[in-house]
Image (cartoon, rainbow, N blue to C red; front, side):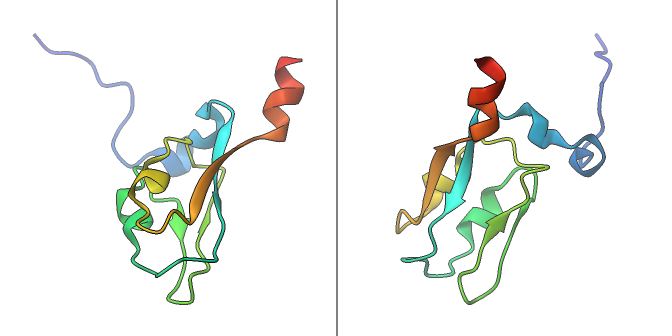
Length: 91
């Protein structure tokens, strides 16, 4: 049986997958960061960027809010926070 594919791999840049978030997004605290880059490696959308000075950010246009970055951070320097627009949309 062949199942049709609705999207191709690596199309998040074209599809702006950040609109799929469920009301939470990662917040990079940047106090305990050790620049291990694990958050960059586990991000399924490749939207986390940063340098050796621990200034990591997520491009929220593409971030799905999956929380993988939070789960792998060995020093708990990333947290999931509620988005303000989400509360305004559902009220």
